[in-house]
Image 1 (cartoon, rainbow, N blue to C red):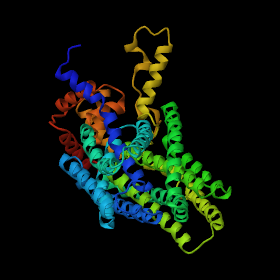
Image 2: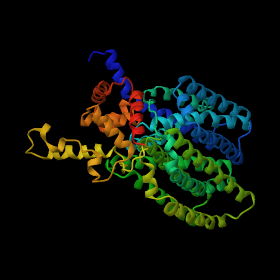
Image 3: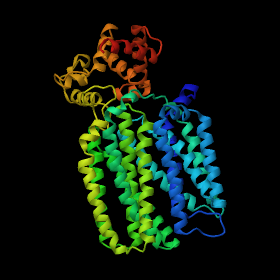
Image 4: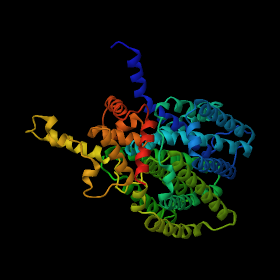
Length: 519
């Protein structure tokens, strides 16, 4: 096959998802290496207390920055789309990491958290462009790739591990720029976020309680074991969790597309809560318990990351706001858990008392999982921000309409009597409103229907038209409707002609006049 610029571009586009995974894997591996404390440049090997303090300072700085990003999400959204800012943040994080290893100053430790927070915001923005199943697979694959990078760095010849570790943030920032084509999503309706702000607050509260409960043990046991034992426990947990991540990947890949995402994440929360109960009680020893809680914490990160980005994808809210407030709170609460665990050790609390404390925390976790946050609360967060009362699809495979179209396609293939596919009822797209009976549409949807009728849009054009009004890009609209990009582009051209518009913003401005008529 002759290589042409178009073929080269298509080939480059096909490897973009892999490059995006590598950029996030570099960042995760950097975090794991900082936590292990196995790479240092100073004349004296750091003890576990120094590692705990450094990890807490860096994580606190990053979490506070992410929470602040949530309040200024539109400005941050503009910043993370500028290559110079991302490359600069990666370079400054790498320089701070090197200076931290050289000088051991807490100032440079805090700066690593500040600069990498911008990279984390960009990664979350990239993940919010794909459907929840891809998000889950991406998060699990990122953890696997990070384990490979973690092991590779430790096996490098003497003198090279510190250099490579310092370069990881820069590599993560630069490789994320190669997937910048996805960064065109502009969330809408954030001014209505307060409508369900209390539900999100309940979710964040539950995530914070889970994080504190799990990280108390992770802060207690490293203080009472030697550095060699701590590093060995960290290495063992990395190996164990590598195989756990492989199993998780296979499970996610085998999930049907109609799997309910909110139920899946909710039951995962409960499973993690029950998993923490027997670990301190069975008396595995400090190292084994630390390894087990490290795996549980990594699984909690996977669930929370999937849930937050899934909410941003399905609801249309700002990924930076959802991820910044959710993940920032979780990271901050993990620091609180570490400090509580270290405080128990500092006050000479007997390790035999820890199981009792964990059982009490388990009770609090279950209360959060049953009363504070439940599937109904999570379902509400997945609804779009258009003010519509209709229930939306929260399956892992895309929209409800897309799932229905897949089922219709299977029915068509199984039918041997269907000779004219164009006239087959199974091939006609089923609109969400047709499946919801007599439920009355909301004001926003009525305005959309009125504008579409006035512009004489076809049924498929109306589907694309509605997504454009929600701020979807052509790529994301194609994924949501399970049709090709070229088909969406053709529909968009027809919509612009029929609506006498020249841009997506013109359509949104036109809809505002219809909304004012219904006030």
